[in-house]
Length: 260
Length: 157
Image (cartoon, chains in turn yellow, purple):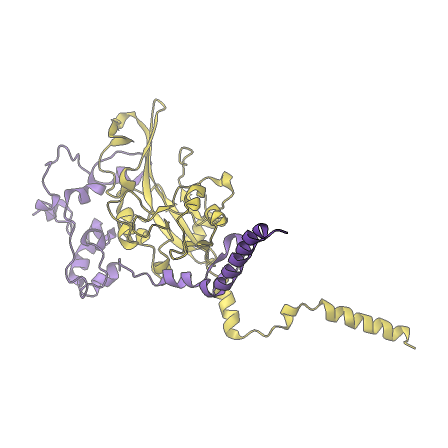
């Protein structure tokens, strides 16, 4: 015959035993703990200061060379857009050759060989906006890939597996920012990956290094001492197309409502 | 059931079996669902290492300084100190072994990237010293008169 005291004791023991999850019994090696910690400690983010950008296009030149994007093909991982707003309410935007050769003329490229010259006194505001992959927290390009060829690495960068990509082009259609294209040589989807081979070696992305004016910066948003993380978390910054819910990780200082 | 109905069914079943047999050999071991789940984390893990192995081409000013300290020190005293050597001299890659000589971009267009005057308010471009390329010695290379390592007007050749 079991006493009431024993019944309550044993029940309490059994409940306590059952509520210990299996994961709590796993023995972790120090190496495994370190790996878990370091993986979580990096999330790459980009900061663009549009006030500092002068439209020289040295970033685009460096990017194309560094990442072996055919120099004369009209595709690029990053580009610079020029926005010109006139006092009488007209609005122009262009990016000839992705600004690979910079902006050396005041004539706006309207496409199909047409150019529009805007006189200095007509300009209300004019500025340059560098664009690149936003390495979204919720990347729509990754969602649509039918074969698992594009994915988000643990540090937040969206990569393309060239050996796995079948070239269906869904991701190119899905990206709201238009940063993806077909690589003319590999015939697979291609995109900016923050120069993954450089940032994982402790270097800056090629465009960040090439920019003479500090308009482009890259940093680890999970490191509270990172100057880029500090700016993003404590100052007023904007993102592109927030209405899509993609949570882009390229932050802009000095965004204007005309910039899309 | 009649044989002609069953025969295509056997073919389909046979194909499914063949695909299932090939699959374990064809799909790499590290392909599968990772940290961020099926929606964002379904991939071949080895590809991350593949991307890390891409060769670095732009080495940065410090790399140049190891041998060309005099040149770097000269430009560092000028407003052009903010410009990377490789922006004009091209990516160093494994220089001096490969390539032994770099192709320098001395073109007029290279200088005009910044120094073609564009008065764009709220952009850093407006603050740069610039010229009107159509009126300032058109057709002539800037380096005929200006020294990009000593860009001040006192540095004129």
